[in-house]
Amino acid sequence: MYKIVSKRTLTDNIFLMDIEAPRVAKSALPGQFVIVKNTDRGERIPLTVADFDRDRGTVTIVFQTVGKSTLELATYNEGDYVCDFVGPLGRPSDLVDESVEELKKKSIIFIAGGVGAAPVYPQVKWLHEKGVDADVIVGSRTKDLLIMEEDMKAVAGNLYISTDDGSYGFNGRVTDCLKDLVENKGKKYDHAVVIGPMIMMKFAAAMTKELNIPTIVSLNPIMVDGTGMCGACRVTVGDEVKFACVDGPEFDGHLINYDEAMRRQAMYKTEEGRAKLKFEEGDTHSHGGCGCGGDK
Image (cartoon, rainbow, N blue to C red):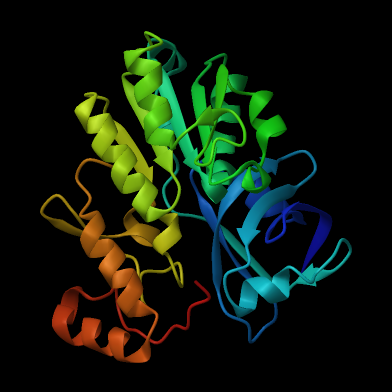
């Protein structure tokens, strides 16, 4: 059992929790994820590590209520316990493997959409602690849906807020904000990390390709069971079949077939759709077996 040591409500349906999990906190790195189960019979919920404190032995998760299991988790409070908290899983951010000297030579931009601010934060914080400042764009549909602004402000070199409706910060989408920074503000970037809804990552990657900025995206949003067995996060990257939870969650953003991935997401929500995908994809459907239920 894993204790919830603190809880914050970020918006009406987005919550932050610090979970007491010393062994996970000891090994966690930016870009990785955990699997949470509320009860022993509960569904598996893959969630990106939003922060970790090795001294306190805590791991921070941020989640949006999009299904039964996350709705149930949102009812838990400080002092309650979740049954399972497994991790860290997935591959860490590629930035972790680079020398600090090389990172300092780069001009890095992070682009976060909605809940994507949560997995962006630990990467920016990690860089900040190494003396590397990165620019960050955080976008949301409206000011009321913006999360982690103050947290991000403390670690970003420059923080740019973008709202689709113009209610706060830059008036427009994150792609518009990036284009404005490059074309009107004289900014130059040679590395981008984009995390958010699939449709947002698709258009942001198209923009960074136009601007000739190498780009990494995180496919955590398409995970279901977090092990590769359900086939939900199967995606085509270039000419290869990959699984976000096993091979990622980060990939070259300019090589992903976003339209295929989004079609699979829609089909996977129905039993008939899952059966059709399993039949059509045969041995490439999963990393071994199927049978998970999903909360996303």
